[in-house]
Length: 570
Image (cartoon, rainbow, N blue to C red; front, side, top):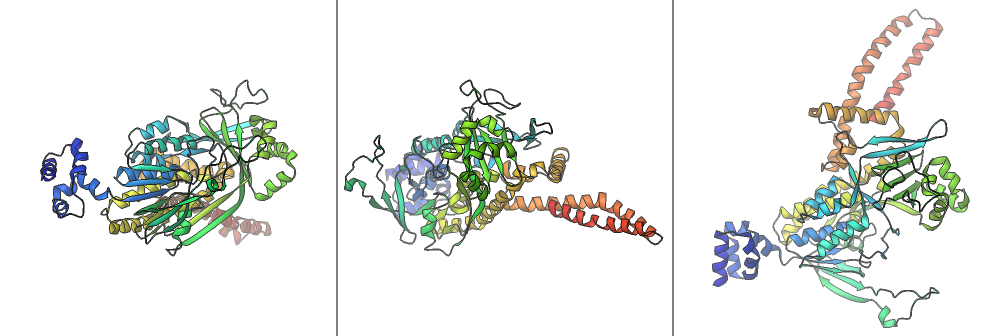
């Protein structure tokens, strides 16, 4: 009776500070008393009802990277019991190697990822993350002038001055995991490998990996008993499992045993290798700096640097320690040639990426190419992303993409926001989750496929388009219309992808429509006068000499030029 009186008083006097006590005093959901209260309209709108209706949901999050950590945060904020399982050790430990086998990797954080984190319920999280980032206002295109001098050309990302953020993946992951670990309804489990999942019986099995002891000086593994080495398997019940475990997802693998999933995996003919440009300090006397160098950085800290080439490119992203994380992208045949003749790496860089080797340093360039792994690039599409009410995959597990749009992590974080937006739109029951996951897949799969395609196409823009007159012309026209005539709704594809939350599929449709409009305008301002000129040539043709006839036929060839331009714009 006391619980009844307290709950009724809380409904009449909805003071936020009492909501936690209401949850503690509520009867079980299976009781007739709870059923009577749940029918009251004010109670159904109260925070107590929301927490009571969802507090028993058991959610497993597999993968503790940025997407997994944010997923756990969203789930925990809804009162769910959350357990996070990660194959590797604690990712906040600097000795843990990421799944891409590199120690230092910088990422581009843009509006979609920021927006998703702002909706996590952690007010100070985004500010703490952004305090540890570096703004990048555009691309810096590096090249070589006619006299052999190194050149730099800045291309701003956005006519309105918006920018993306260079962020250290490890630090971002740490801040997210710290936020998650502080919640009382979340448990973190590291060194746990998913070995099986039954999405009908709602059971998952994990092997508890034994952390290896440090190696001895001669490289021999320290003695451990066979019992200690044997992995122990545990069985965990769940209501919903969120697969955030990367491109080679175990959650997806086991889900495919239960759902007819269309799956497409593609390796492009491009490998990548990581390099580092050190800070511009006396500690590196052999290093040079570029004209845009400032504040201890060897080159501009507020740009994403690109050395473009016909079929390869080299990029550099700034880090807080004033170094740059760099990446070489090149065909597999190029890597094979360099691996067979590693002494040619310096000459290769001087020929293809002028100025880059001087920023890195010749000795460091050779050492880093020899010691850092040469890794493939994978693109994954699949559909659906869920199974009934019990499983869903997010991030790279659902749509691993090439890195050329800087949207891999941002799209994964956006997955989390969109997923819970759909779940929140339905009752907090198994049937509600089923409906929410169905509508989520219906929306998100199309967007995931689109950004995969856009990321692959953006490789051309980065290594060739940044020097293309037609590309730069379209960019200038769209930016002019966006800035001077905003009512037209024009914006570049890059700004729509990086500085808005418009659905990726809608971005592609809108940009294609803009292209058709631009072609129509070009036809009106160029082709119509040209047709008048052509009519004059037709009149001349009747009385023309052989030379005139040849000239007329030559003019007709311009049609092919206009056709190619039209295809590019659309």
